[in-house]
Each structure stands twice: as structure tokens, then as C-alpha cells.
Amino acid sequence: MSDPIVMARAGQRDVVLLPAMANRHGLIAGATGTGKTVTLQVLAEEFSRRGVPVFLADVKGDLAGISQPGGQSPKVRERVQQLALSGFVPAACPVTFWDVFGEKGHPVRATISELGPLLLARLLQLNETQAGVLNIVFRVADEHGLLLLDLKDLRAMLKYVGDEASALTTQYGNISPASIGAIQRGLLQIESQGGDKFFGEPALNLDDFMQTAEGRGIVNILAADRLMLAPRVYATFLLWLLNELFERLPEAGDLPQPKLVFFFDEAHLLFDEMPDALLQKVEQVVRLVRSKGVGIYFVTQNPRDVPESVLGQLGNRVQHALRAFTPADQKAVRAAAQTFRANPALNTEEVLTQLAVGEALVSVLDADGQPTVVERALIVPPRSQIGPVDASQRRAIIDGSIVAGFYEKAVDRESAYERLTGAVSSAPAQQAAPPVAPEKKGFFERLFGGDGAPPQAQAPEPAPLPRSEPRYRGGGRAPQSLGDIVVRTATRSITSNIAGTITRELVRGVLGGLLGGSRRR
Image (cartoon, rainbow, N blue to C red; front, top):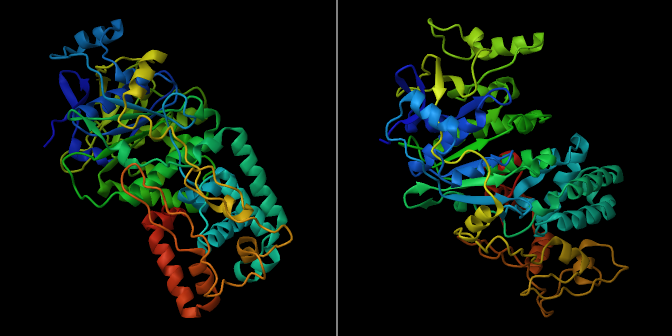
């Protein structure tokens, strides 16, 4: 069993987190300036020392210092002496920097299909009717084998569905121009916030998060200071990561320590204005992803930022000071105090407003999975640097990363946009699609010309849909040719219709079905 993680010290006794209980999730809460970031850093570097990869979002830009040895700060030296920490040696953690905008780290991308209609509807703040139209767009793309990789693919599909609304309505339901327009406007807004950089290929392979270096887990740091200016993109990105983790990782059961630990800072953004349907799925994922060896730690100012159904699953708690200036604040303090297992020697509610910076109320799970009584403790100092790194240090780490040069090369292969418009893909290996006659309006007419009928047996085989490029590790699967799709569509029976639907849903994967995403094609 891995050595316990020393988080804090209460008097002369260490307060420890058992690695075997670390995947039971946790909460780090407290008002601004009370020490949440340092607590996060301490836990991250301790997981890394034990060979557990970590993901964290650097909202303020000051967590990058975990890549450098620390100990020079007077406050750190003072805390080491105060706690009489023997064997305290400054140390850095191996780090990989990531950035949706590709400026302070390796670019992070996902495809439109991977995000899925449910998460995308939340990102675009669509109502129920508009979200229904978006689901139709995804269904039409799926049934005709059209890849939705980036925003221009989705726009092309929206235009097609809008143009063919009268023909599609009888099969899929009402498609109003107003809903199409609302979705298009939402995409423009996301693009204006820089969110378009998140969509495309090569898409992030989460295997690249689960790396070690010389026995220590890689700390994956997402530069989120600029991303926070687009909070919906930030929240959607984190929810997508949960989606991908649940979908990709196998069941692992009870492990001596987690496979991966995620810290979600500014957790309130995840749940703000979240639809009930999506919240229910997130609750399921948080509950079930534990069995896949993943620990999730929410970092926020107040425990009430996290829904009760999720909060109840967070067994490890570090609660820094809360402020009680208003009646609402006092109620929040009282509620936070009641979530801990009572300590007869401690007035939890009173202490919550008296904690100093770097001091916290701590309750963790014991070896039997039961929460320990709450204790007032001083958080141990981190061994790495507290604060940001300079540009040259960051660049050296990025250039020396194991994924250096891979995600920086954007790929724009043939997908829905090229198929529907006849445009030439910018990918070198792709060939130009045949020109589309402007007067033709039907789906198959756009692709093949003529009357839209499937090609005859003696006619040349239409160009197949592009085969997925291999990912950084592993490969994709090739969709069927358009000729196969046309013939199947023209001849299949009701029974085969049902079978095809079941097959597609299975291919999407377990969480793809829950969150509306789809596997890569």
C-alpha cells in the first residue's frame, strides 16, 4: 500500500489522506485568499510523487510553479519550522502545459462529435426546442456518415438541415428556421470568445494525461487564466473531460491508489445554470468514475456551489475559512459545518470563521471508508515553488514535453463541410470533392449530382468518406463509403432500421449515450 499523504498537522499529529481512499473524491473550499490554491498544490505534488498523474486548471496562473523546486519563500520556511517537518526537501514535479488557445501550452482540441449535442446545447445556452433541432442535426450527420469535426462542419450541417427542413420534418420532427438561426448565433458568440480553437483535430487523447516520468506522475496544467473569460467554454471543457474519462477507462475496482486525479477549480462554473438532465448525468459519472480509478476534487469558494447530490459523494474535505458578513453567509457557514462528522472538542461553526490563512478544517476517509471526525489543522507547505514561472521556463518545459510538436500541427481533413459544399480539404492527402451543381438541393443530389439516385453498379464508385487519421496512440475506424450508405438507405427494412440504430448507440459508448457524445470516426 502506498504511504499516506500528509496533508496537514493538528497539534503534534499528522492528518493524512490514504491513497486507497483518494478516488472517493474530495472538496477543497474556502473564501478568496484563505489558502485553497496551496492546498491543491500540496495534494497534486504528493500524488505525483507516488506516480499518480494529475490534471489541474491553473485559473490564476500561479500553479505553474509546481514545475520548479521551492522552499525559498520565508512563509514556507516559517511553516516548516512551525510544524517541525523533518526531511523537508524542495522538489519540482514533472509537468505538461496545455492551453485551449495554444499560447501557454500544447493546444487542446475536441471534435464536435465528441462533445455531443447535450454538452453543446449547454455551451450554446439553447432551450429545449433548439436543443431538439441540434439533436436532429447530429442524427442526420450520423446516418449519412458525415464527420462533424469543427465549427464549419456544424454550420454546414445546420445550413443543410435548414434548407431541407420540409423534407426532414416528417422523419425527425419540426425544424424551425428560428431554431436554426439561434444555434448559428450561438456559434458566432462562441467563436468570438475564441472557442472555435477548441474544436478540431488532432483531438486530445486522454492517454497523454496518464503519463509518468522517472516514477513520478505527470502534472498536467491547463492554462485557464484566459479561458476563464469564456466561462461556458471552460465549464464545457471540464465536463467533456469527465465524459471522455468515463467512456475510455476500463473498470478497475478498488486500487491501492488512483490512476488519475482531477482538480476542477472554480467548480461553481460547472453547475451554474446546468439543465436538470445534464446534472443527473454528471451525478452518475461522478459516482461511477470512482470504480475506474479516477479521483475528482472540486475546488470552490463555498460548498453550496456544488449540488447536494454531488457534494454527498465527496468523502475527503478540506474547508478553509468562510466569511459571514450577511445572513446568507451565516446560513452557508452553518450548512458547511453540518456536513462534517462532529468533533466534541470543536465548535465547527464558530471555528469556520476564525481560521487563519493556511489553516483548515479537515475530514478524510479512514481505511473503512468512514469519514474521520473534523479537525482543525495547519496545511503543510508545498515542496515546489509557490507562484508563476517566467516565459522562458514555460517554453523550455513545452519544448521538452513528450507530446511536443504533435498537437501543434492542426489537421483539417475532409468532413461534413467539404462534403456538403464541395470545398477542397486543406489536409494534404485529401482530394477535391466533385463540384456541386448550385441548382441541386437534395442531399444525394448535392453529393452525386443527377436526380439523387444511388450510383448504378457499372458507375464508378463514389469517393469513400475519409478514414480517420491515427491518433497519437491507437487508431480510428473508417466510416462506410457513401455508396454503401445510399444503397442501404434505399433498401433497408424497418427491422434493419432498428438494428442500425442500436448498433450506432453501442458504438457511441456508455457515456456517449449518457451525455450525447459520440466516438471518433
